[in-house]
Image (cartoon, rainbow, N blue to C red):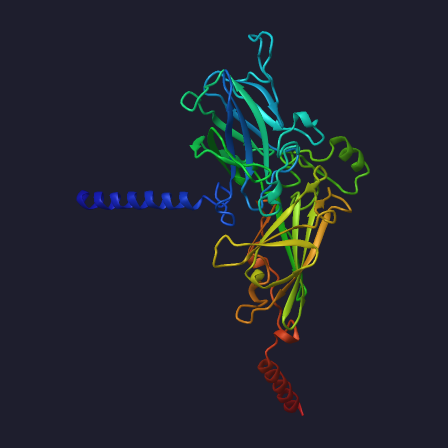
Length: 453
């Protein structure tokens, strides 16, 4: 009997281990370092040594945002690292170290920063010209690559001392960290790459960096925040049901200490509370709602035409502490390959899968609705989308008209459960009613009437 039990127990153990491994792999979602809608998106930090000095080198550090729709908003990025030896920063242009550290051993010239692990931030707009460098001084704000590629980079220059003075003696910094403005990014080790080539302004001369290394940083929503930051609600013309955001999506009112609390919009002291905290405070102060999310995206199927159908999209800000500048929305829906017009949002097609065009990026028109104001009467932006019907796929049945996925500012928004979507009622519209069913109903009524005659 023992001979039979042992193989069975061994087989059961192997099956258990395999099942646990599958469940462990399945637990990793798109919020954990991989974004299926932007599979190659990352932030690349390029460190170019442009000249050698008596005790070190001068380098230009550039932060490139190669993410299609995730930008860095105010109060901006902060970049940190750990020196390999006892390097110091003698001077900087276009940026500054947040802490000078202990420079007491230096006599005469005092370095800009002596910390072993410095943290650097961008300078603010309006910085004197003699302290600037190219692509600097925007308060750490970097646009996304698809939304504004001309402003998708930020640079600063630093003079490093007590360092190597040649390609063989210089040592690469380590333990890079990037906050944009909070946590969420994980940076790899610095890697030496082919030296960068620079084109002169008149495009008649090319120069080359003496040495270049890159650091690649990827984003994880799971690391950035413990709870979601946005949710989606749905409605349609063919059903009176308005599907709200799931309850307690971003927190619950009875346990709102983690999310900074909530405020009744009708409270008499609301103005004083908001003004005391100020705008762009990283800690959200949200309006009391059932979902407790700072952002809600509402998708309303508005009209049905013979060859087209129309959707209204509304983004509402429930956060009293944040004005969202250069906001953007990414929506995945199979009918985006036949989008005819976006009425008051900018539109760009995103194709994470080259053969499928079902993802769109939407953002505000400059100086019109590119600023999503804090919670209140002006805290919303909206637009309408006109789609052309594809007879082979179009239907209002089973929630087809609603988006598959929505991102706000690069963060995945929580959708309602599919079984809660507005469903087509019987005979919801004349266009959706079968002529055969009408004839059957007509003759049934006649037969009923003649039966009682």
